[in-house]
Every structure is written in structure tokens, then in C-alpha cells.
Amino acid sequence: MSWEKPTFCARDWELQKEESVYRGFFRMDRLTLRHRLFAGGWSRPIRRELFRRGHSVGVLLYDPVADRVALLEQFRIGALEADGGPWLLEVVAGMMEPGQTAEAVALREIAEETGLESAELRPIGRFLLSPGGSDETIALFCGLVDLADVGGIYGLPDESEDIRVFTLSSDEAFEALRAGRCNNAPAAISLQWLQLNRDSLRTPQPSS
Image 1 (tube, rainbow, N blue to C red):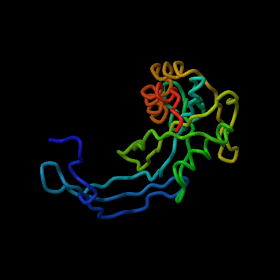
Image 2 (cartoon, rainbow, N blue to C red):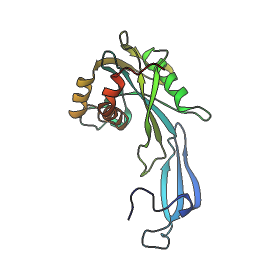
Image 3 (tube, rainbow, N blue to C red):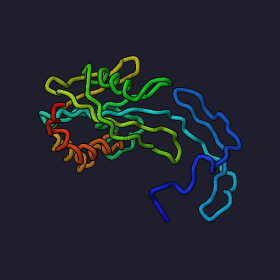
């Protein structure tokens, strides 16, 4: 049995019914569907609510010369009952709108949340955040930047954003991850990726 290739594909499930449950700032639908089973045949009809969160982008800002990262601290309603409280240490992030590219959203959010006007984006990957009940994916990047003058309070008031931006050494960021302070998936994945790739990012590339 191979783990390298999925057993099934997009043709191996059937949507039988879709109903709107809620339309507001977010969207939720109720789906009735069935899918093929590993033992053969088809499942009985399954009814589930699906949170249509949409697609997002996250960027870990890294200064390879100073070996420092920038993190954001902000209030998150989904973390009201988190052990450390609802103020999380995060990477730059924002939602994609139809027709937008992940790279364009990344650069827009970097400018809005840190004041930086440019960054060299290195792709980390695209991930499903909570596939048990949400369709949200996030495209993660590492943004190579100069963090010498980065820091302060940012965010769009009309979106009730209150964001504190600060920098710390990579080792301090990795210690925050080990201590459980970076307790959200985008930050944790990005920092783990940086741990694996920091040396190559800091090595000057040969000129062509």
C-alpha cells in the first residue's frame, strides 16, 4: 500500500444536495454527499456543515543579513479560550479576493501591516488549515526584507485591526515556538520552515 499517491481522486465523491445555512461576514453551507470507501462501495449519505472561509496568504518576514524575523501580535476572537489568551504571535496575513494572486496579496498585506513596500518572496507551501469543517487554505511565503526600521503599531481602523509589529532574532523566535508562544499553524509552519532553510537563505547566491 502506497502513501505517495492518494487512493481516490475528485471523481470519487458525489454532491447530492447543497443548502445555504448562513450568509454574513462569513458563509456556511450544509452539504449532503457520499464518497467511495477504502473497503469498496460507497458511504451512506453524509450531511455536514462547511465553513466557507475562503483562501488566505501568510508571510514570515526574515532579514537574512541581520538574522532576524518580524512577528505580529494581535487580538483573535478564535483564541478567546487559548491558554495564553487571545493575543497571538503571528506572521503577516490576509484574505484573498477572487482574481487576486497570492503574491499580490502577500505584498499588499506586508505594506498594510508593517509599512514595508517590497519583499523578495520565497514560497513555503499551501496548506489546508482545518479540513474537518472549513475549506480555507493558506499560501505561505518567506519574505526576505531589511528589518532595520521595522516596528510599531499598524492595522486598518475600519477593519478593527490593532497590530503590534516587532522584530527578534531567529533564535529567539525559535525559542518562542518551542515554548508554545507561536500557537497558530501559519506561524508554526513558517518558523519550522525557516529552521530548515535559514542557512541557505543566509548564503550569498552566486551572481550570474
